[in-house]
Image 1 (cartoon, rainbow, N blue to C red):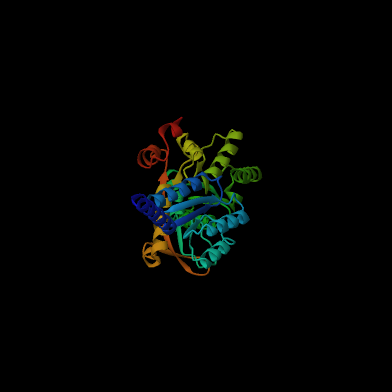
Image 2 (spheres, rainbow, N blue to C red; image 1 turned 90 degrees about the horizontal axis):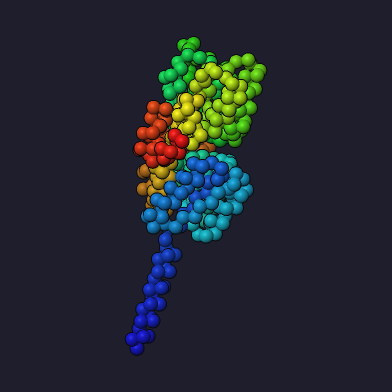
Amino acid sequence: MRNINLIVFMCLIVIINACQSDKAVKLGFIYSTPNTERYVKEANFFRAYAEKHGATVYLEHGNGDEAIQYQKALELFDKGIDGLAIIAVNANTAAAIVREGQGRGVKVMAYNRLIKNCDLDFFVSGDNNALGKMMVDEIIKVKPRGNAIILGGDKYDRNAVELAASINKHLKPHIESGNIDVLYETFVEEWSDVNAAYELEQFISLSGQVPDIIFAGFDGMSGGCIRVLGERNEEKVVYISGQDATVEGVKNIVAGKQQMTAFHPLKDTGSKAAEIMLQLVANEKKAEKMANSYTNNGQIDVPTVKVPSIAVTKSNVKKVLVDDAKFYTYEEIYN
């Protein structure tokens, strides 16, 4: 009899644990491509926070293909996830993922890239207006006069459009005063270093001028411009902005080849997104109270959290990225 009771008891434990497992929150995070290092890190920070708070998290990526990303989303929906965060490959077509998810009762969050024309539940991103101001302020601080070109990111990425608009807005008083002359402006497909290098090479070849300032929207693009200047054996100091605090970008800053980059506190942003997602799944009204702004996506005003970035220059690289954020080791930056 004791053995029978023990078996019954053990069976009950197994059943209870299975029920608890079924009730555990399941979340998905699909980023656009593994080729962007920060997206991989942010996805893992999201997972670490959510799993610390009892959730199961599935990470996927779209390999830069919107059709693959859609298929990955369907697979996650079939796993029974409660919430999905997306760094969209295509901000327009990803609306289909949002609609499919919400049709299945899944909360959907856009991360970094706003998804257009859908009833999106939440948006977590940086602040592009503040980012453009930061770039202008840091460059003008050291180079208040001169000729400039603006190399924005991919024009199909809302972030690129907003950043370029912010740079222009905050440059306007310097242009009107006659201190800054913008000679050329364009968007760069795929935020590519190769495409940025091509644009700079064409500009120099056709105009016969080397700009004093290059407002580049991403460290990879900055690196492409720096390679062009190096191949031309250009001795003129050119002041170049950047974004994302990549290893290459930070090393260029230390070497004096790039003036600044914008560091996005990836752990803070990924963790905040996970916190919001857990709250969305549990209580949508409480989640909305976490918003610090709203962003119109063409259909609704989406509750938004904007996480501020930090300007990194040669004078504060070690403090910001090594000492405070522990984002890189000293050896990674200085060796």
